[in-house]
View 1 (cartoon, rainbow, N blue to C red):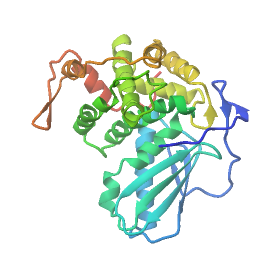
View 2: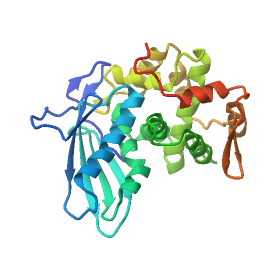
View 3: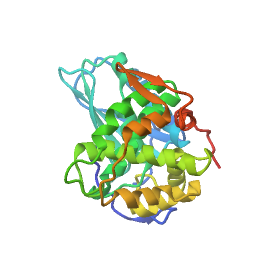
View 4: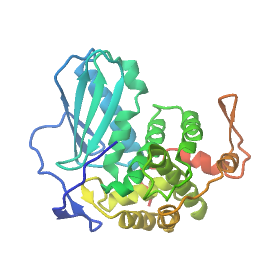
Length: 310
């Protein structure tokens, strides 16, 4: 979702400028993964109770914590805006300026079952785990959130692992370059921004696991960026962030893949990719081949990463 640019004020651990706001003294509504979360509900009616909303937010924070090893920012604010006459989580937007915070529109007649199916809250929280980027690099922010969100939810049992791959098979074709494409940094369509970014993440995940003999994955690169101070409270050049990720995994996959995809369309044979991973959609249902050449990589991507991957 659209996010505001960060103003520089301090220097972060990876040499990036920080835009963190001053710490607040009041107790947080939630504490998850080392992060404090403040929750406000706007004017209007909701059938849901505050306790039900907090449980939903807490579950999303637990998913993000599972993927990144901790909650990405020390303090995070959420504003829930009720929308009259509607049902479900309608949209979300996350900003970095003024401290990490998100605004989510929730229909007044939303039920707990709707929250259990929701992906928007987790998606917005993932945005806090990467340095804030200018518009040309919006694809990396949305691509990471699109790729990580279902994996993170599956790691804590909130989403079927098979559905993660079904979503990728159905969604990633939207991210392939079309006629006139000039690369990820210059083609700002919805498909290239969200699913082109997710394709970048998937290709990076596969290549990292291939080149490290299965010892590392994209999760380790993203955790490395976060450990270097690269959350959304820093204004850090994309090349520097990717370099930090590559340092964490020991191979320059992110930098090389970015160099290849940033200024030119890169063709990806998705049929061959799914076949190598052992994925087949038959009559709309997922089938897996555990003897496929890269089936072990598919299983590794799906498996929950250890809390510490040194």
